Length: 210
Image 1: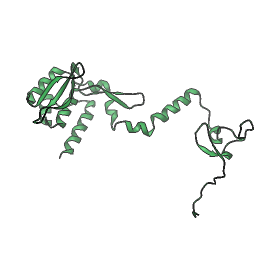
Image 2: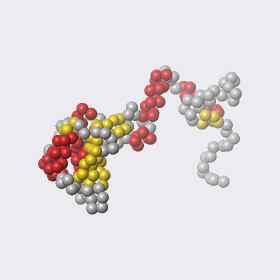
Image 3: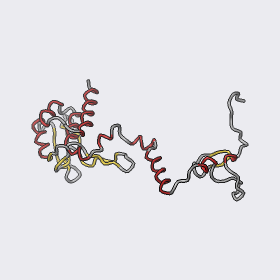
Image 4: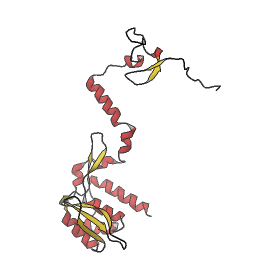
Protein backbone atom coordinates (compact mmCIF):
# COMPACT_ATOMS: atom_id res chain seq x y z
CA UNK A 1 0.00 0.00 0.00
CA UNK A 2 1.37 3.41 -0.97
CA UNK A 3 1.17 5.97 1.82
CA UNK A 4 0.75 9.65 1.22
CA UNK A 5 -0.54 9.24 -2.36
CA UNK A 6 -4.18 10.07 -3.08
CA UNK A 7 -5.20 7.60 -5.76
CA UNK A 8 -8.64 7.92 -7.39
CA UNK A 9 -11.11 5.21 -6.46
CA UNK A 10 -11.63 2.68 -9.21
CA UNK A 11 -15.29 2.48 -8.17
CA UNK A 12 -16.03 6.09 -9.21
CA UNK A 13 -17.95 6.05 -12.49
CA UNK A 14 -16.89 8.53 -15.14
CA UNK A 15 -17.65 9.56 -18.70
CA UNK A 16 -16.18 11.67 -21.47
CA UNK A 17 -17.51 15.15 -22.16
CA UNK A 18 -18.50 15.57 -25.80
CA UNK A 19 -17.31 19.20 -25.80
CA UNK A 20 -13.92 19.27 -24.09
CA UNK A 21 -13.12 15.57 -24.54
CA UNK A 22 -12.05 15.20 -20.89
CA UNK A 23 -13.02 12.15 -18.85
CA UNK A 24 -14.60 13.26 -15.57
CA UNK A 25 -16.58 11.66 -12.69
CA UNK A 26 -20.32 11.38 -13.31
CA UNK A 27 -21.04 13.90 -10.57
CA UNK A 28 -19.45 16.53 -12.84
CA UNK A 29 -22.36 16.04 -15.27
CA UNK A 30 -25.90 17.31 -14.54
CA UNK A 31 -28.66 14.76 -14.16
CA UNK A 32 -30.82 14.06 -17.21
CA UNK A 33 -33.28 11.17 -17.22
CA UNK A 34 -33.47 11.19 -21.02
CA UNK A 35 -29.86 9.95 -21.26
CA UNK A 36 -29.08 6.26 -20.74
CA UNK A 37 -26.69 6.78 -17.84
CA UNK A 38 -28.83 9.54 -16.30
CA UNK A 39 -26.27 12.30 -16.92
CA UNK A 40 -25.92 14.92 -19.61
CA UNK A 41 -23.32 14.58 -22.39
CA UNK A 42 -21.62 17.86 -21.50
CA UNK A 43 -19.83 18.44 -18.21
CA UNK A 44 -21.03 21.30 -15.99
CA UNK A 45 -17.99 23.43 -16.89
CA UNK A 46 -18.69 23.20 -20.62
CA UNK A 47 -22.41 23.86 -20.12
CA UNK A 48 -21.56 27.02 -18.19
CA UNK A 49 -19.23 28.24 -20.93
CA UNK A 50 -20.65 30.82 -23.38
CA UNK A 51 -22.05 29.23 -26.52
CA UNK A 52 -20.09 29.86 -29.70
CA UNK A 53 -21.55 30.37 -33.12
CA UNK A 54 -20.48 27.95 -35.84
CA UNK A 55 -18.13 30.57 -37.27
CA UNK A 56 -16.64 31.28 -33.82
CA UNK A 57 -16.19 27.58 -33.14
CA UNK A 58 -14.44 27.03 -36.48
CA UNK A 59 -12.19 30.03 -35.78
CA UNK A 60 -11.37 28.67 -32.30
CA UNK A 61 -10.44 25.26 -33.71
CA UNK A 62 -8.29 26.96 -36.36
CA UNK A 63 -6.46 29.00 -33.71
CA UNK A 64 -5.84 25.88 -31.60
CA UNK A 65 -4.50 24.07 -34.65
CA UNK A 66 -2.28 26.95 -35.80
CA UNK A 67 -0.76 27.28 -32.32
CA UNK A 68 -0.26 23.56 -31.76
CA UNK A 69 3.18 22.29 -30.79
CA UNK A 70 3.31 20.08 -33.90
CA UNK A 71 2.98 23.08 -36.20
CA UNK A 72 5.37 25.21 -34.15
CA UNK A 73 8.06 22.60 -34.71
CA UNK A 74 7.58 22.90 -38.50
CA UNK A 75 8.26 26.62 -38.49
CA UNK A 76 11.66 28.26 -38.85
CA UNK A 77 13.37 30.43 -36.33
CA UNK A 78 13.26 34.05 -37.55
CA UNK A 79 10.92 33.07 -40.39
CA UNK A 80 9.38 36.54 -40.27
CA UNK A 81 12.51 37.67 -42.12
CA UNK A 82 11.29 35.71 -45.16
CA UNK A 83 7.73 37.07 -45.26
CA UNK A 84 8.19 40.34 -47.17
CA UNK A 85 8.23 38.88 -50.68
CA UNK A 86 8.48 42.26 -52.42
CA UNK A 87 11.61 43.16 -50.44
CA UNK A 88 13.21 39.79 -51.17
CA UNK A 89 13.30 40.50 -54.90
CA UNK A 90 15.96 43.11 -54.11
CA UNK A 91 18.48 43.66 -56.94
CA UNK A 92 17.35 41.12 -59.51
CA UNK A 93 19.86 39.56 -61.90
CA UNK A 94 19.56 37.46 -65.02
CA UNK A 95 21.20 34.08 -64.52
CA UNK A 96 23.71 34.91 -67.29
CA UNK A 97 24.89 37.93 -65.26
CA UNK A 98 25.31 35.70 -62.20
CA UNK A 99 27.29 33.12 -64.19
CA UNK A 100 29.48 35.83 -65.67
CA UNK A 101 30.43 36.96 -62.16
CA UNK A 102 31.14 33.38 -61.12
CA UNK A 103 33.44 32.89 -64.12
CA UNK A 104 35.54 35.78 -62.82
CA UNK A 105 35.99 33.92 -59.53
CA UNK A 106 35.99 30.22 -60.44
CA UNK A 107 37.77 28.25 -63.12
CA UNK A 108 35.84 25.79 -65.31
CA UNK A 109 37.91 23.08 -63.58
CA UNK A 110 36.33 24.09 -60.26
CA UNK A 111 32.65 24.52 -61.15
CA UNK A 112 30.93 22.60 -63.93
CA UNK A 113 27.42 23.45 -65.15
CA UNK A 114 25.06 21.37 -67.25
CA UNK A 115 21.33 21.20 -67.97
CA UNK A 116 19.41 20.07 -64.91
CA UNK A 117 16.76 17.38 -64.68
CA UNK A 118 14.04 20.03 -64.65
CA UNK A 119 13.65 22.10 -67.80
CA UNK A 120 14.92 25.62 -67.19
CA UNK A 121 17.34 24.68 -64.40
CA UNK A 122 21.10 24.25 -64.46
CA UNK A 123 22.89 21.63 -62.35
CA UNK A 124 26.10 22.80 -60.65
CA UNK A 125 28.91 20.35 -59.85
CA UNK A 126 32.11 20.76 -57.87
CA UNK A 127 35.04 19.10 -59.64
CA UNK A 128 37.01 16.81 -57.32
CA UNK A 129 39.78 14.28 -57.89
CA UNK A 130 37.39 11.39 -57.29
CA UNK A 131 34.30 12.43 -59.26
CA UNK A 132 32.12 15.49 -59.90
CA UNK A 133 30.11 16.32 -56.78
CA UNK A 134 26.56 17.65 -57.29
CA UNK A 135 26.07 20.91 -55.41
CA UNK A 136 22.70 22.46 -56.25
CA UNK A 137 20.52 23.75 -59.06
CA UNK A 138 20.51 27.24 -60.52
CA UNK A 139 17.27 28.47 -62.10
CA UNK A 140 17.46 30.36 -65.37
CA UNK A 141 15.88 33.67 -66.26
CA UNK A 142 15.62 36.71 -63.99
CA UNK A 143 16.41 35.75 -60.38
CA UNK A 144 15.44 37.59 -57.20
CA UNK A 145 18.31 38.57 -54.94
CA UNK A 146 17.01 36.47 -52.06
CA UNK A 147 15.02 33.25 -52.36
CA UNK A 148 11.23 33.59 -52.28
CA UNK A 149 9.68 31.18 -49.76
CA UNK A 150 6.10 29.92 -49.95
CA UNK A 151 4.14 29.58 -46.70
CA UNK A 152 0.87 27.70 -46.23
CA UNK A 153 -2.27 28.89 -44.45
CA UNK A 154 -0.85 27.53 -41.15
CA UNK A 155 2.20 29.79 -41.44
CA UNK A 156 4.57 26.89 -42.14
CA UNK A 157 7.24 27.08 -44.87
CA UNK A 158 6.32 24.82 -47.79
CA UNK A 159 9.00 25.24 -50.43
CA UNK A 160 11.47 27.55 -52.10
CA UNK A 161 9.21 29.14 -54.69
CA UNK A 162 12.00 30.95 -56.54
CA UNK A 163 15.70 30.60 -55.78
CA UNK A 164 17.62 33.83 -55.32
CA UNK A 165 21.08 34.44 -56.70
CA UNK A 166 22.49 35.07 -53.22
CA UNK A 167 21.35 31.57 -52.23
CA UNK A 168 23.66 30.26 -54.96
CA UNK A 169 26.52 32.34 -53.57
CA UNK A 170 25.81 31.13 -50.04
CA UNK A 171 25.97 27.50 -51.19
CA UNK A 172 29.34 28.18 -52.81
CA UNK A 173 30.59 29.87 -49.65
CA UNK A 174 29.55 26.91 -47.53
CA UNK A 175 31.28 24.59 -50.01
CA UNK A 176 34.44 26.69 -49.47
CA UNK A 177 34.66 27.46 -53.16
CA UNK A 178 34.33 31.20 -52.57
CA UNK A 179 35.25 33.59 -49.77
CA UNK A 180 33.17 36.41 -48.32
CA UNK A 181 35.67 38.90 -49.71
CA UNK A 182 35.31 37.54 -53.24
CA UNK A 183 31.53 37.64 -53.04
CA UNK A 184 31.53 41.17 -51.66
CA UNK A 185 33.99 42.47 -54.27
CA UNK A 186 32.21 40.88 -57.24
CA UNK A 187 28.54 41.20 -56.23
CA UNK A 188 28.51 43.97 -53.63
CA UNK A 189 27.06 44.10 -50.13
CA UNK A 190 23.54 42.87 -49.48
CA UNK A 191 21.27 45.82 -48.71
CA UNK A 192 17.73 46.37 -47.46
CA UNK A 193 15.47 44.73 -44.89
CA UNK A 194 15.53 41.38 -46.71
CA UNK A 195 19.30 41.08 -46.18
CA UNK A 196 18.84 40.20 -42.49
CA UNK A 197 18.60 36.45 -43.12
CA UNK A 198 21.62 36.59 -45.47
CA UNK A 199 23.74 38.35 -42.85
CA UNK A 200 22.63 35.91 -40.17
CA UNK A 201 23.62 32.92 -42.33
CA UNK A 202 27.05 34.47 -42.96
CA UNK A 203 27.53 35.11 -39.25
CA UNK A 204 26.61 31.53 -38.35
CA UNK A 205 28.88 30.11 -41.05
CA UNK A 206 31.76 32.40 -40.15
CA UNK A 207 31.63 31.69 -36.43
CA UNK A 208 31.02 27.99 -36.90
CA UNK A 209 34.40 27.64 -38.59
CA UNK A 210 36.57 29.86 -36.41
